[in-house]
Picture (spheres, rainbow, N blue to C red):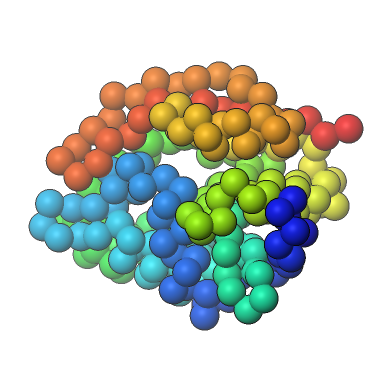
Length: 212
């Protein structure tokens, strides 16, 4: 339950959640998504994320996500995964990118995605990484995000993980404050000079929480 008294339950995402979940995933990092997946000739990051979500596999697939539901309405989305997903996610992303954009445009997106990893690094070692955390705008500030993070951390704990990490844009102090309130602390800030006609990756801060 959120602190506001709103009753939230969490369940694994499903394909039919796409209409709400995909825009929320995009909202978790629109500038970075646009930098990687929006192209000068009309390729659209939101459309690509929708393609991946419905495909089901990989970092952006529905199988990698949980949703928060109030009544019968999806109000939040998030994901949590470890370093063991690196190669399955990489292979799924390559297939999805080439399938969606074609070879020429797809190779450009792959290169841009690899560049972003210098700022927003994938999990390594024993870390459990939280990603794509987002709540419907009208419900932000009511404890839904806190409940989502608590749920994902609970899953990590049940799986035996103790080192939980995430990245937050340096331009998003509200999200950083939320993560701090749930026990995360900044460990490093990575500067970014990544920019294109379609998007810009801002500086990001890696935050970490070690569970007792």
